[in-house]
Image (cartoon, rainbow, N blue to C red; front, side, top):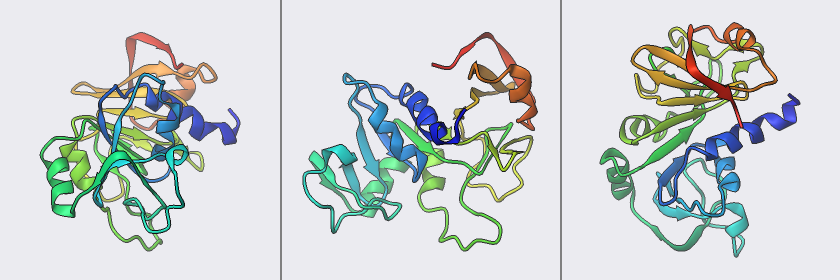
Length: 218
């Protein structure tokens, strides 16, 4: 797969996990690409933890967003019918279980479904932001990320970086595979036909359980 195609491929597959009417929180980076791949009959409400309900996607901007930013500090806007709320209300939504799905990037995910996604060794980072709350408060947690980093696995037996939250991830979607986190371990449920199951396991430190219903990603 061409490197330029990877993020779009992942985002397109993640979009299939969302349902009409869902309230969704998107992490920075790759997750913000997901809405552009939603079918015409699927409409979701995007929530940003800094206090926007009904965040607009880029093609919905009707003005230059000079004074509105999302939780990652990127320019944003509010869709028709959206609202601004204070941080206390925003986190009450998250901690109260009112977010149907959150889609986050990841630096490491392990076999228990624990996630490390906020600190890079040697880099100054402001902190984990709202990720910790989202991981334990959202009804469904999807990690959307590249399968490896510089050729090294990112899906590990145990995370080596500091945890953002433990035993919180429901599904991992990469350019190579769709992996479900279960009580028995990581189940490979879909694979990219450009890779063999053996290649996917070689790129994954954690042991994968091959689903009896294994099917191609589409």
